[in-house]
Length: 178
Image (tube, rainbow, N blue to C red; front, side, top):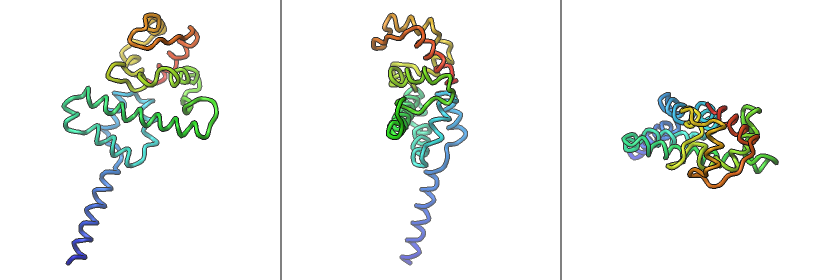
């Protein structure tokens, strides 16, 4: 009898483990694409471990956080930023040059390097105070003129000095995220 109980418990634990390791649902992927952008979402999500996918699914579908979408978005953003930074750390261990893996669009790489050095801590996936690059582009609020004005006035950002060429490169990168 004890052996049957042990086997039953083991079967339940294996089923629970398999459920936790399940891939993200279509709903999860839609949410990630709509909230964080197709380029960023696919690039970051493809390398997640089964445990990380399970954790991300859990955050996205937490009943409490679903009642507070703003809080859910920021919890997911924090998770994604951690994944991004870990990917940069792994990349830096075996590569010289850029701190993070290159952009999938080679033309966007100079702007991505600027973003990685000076902007992504706040704007890659967004923070409570700073919108993500994807949202700014999606809402039509990120042009060269708007970025130049924001940098000139300091906005809510730390002082960042970029040349007109660097601003153009950064805009090219941010527009590649949509």
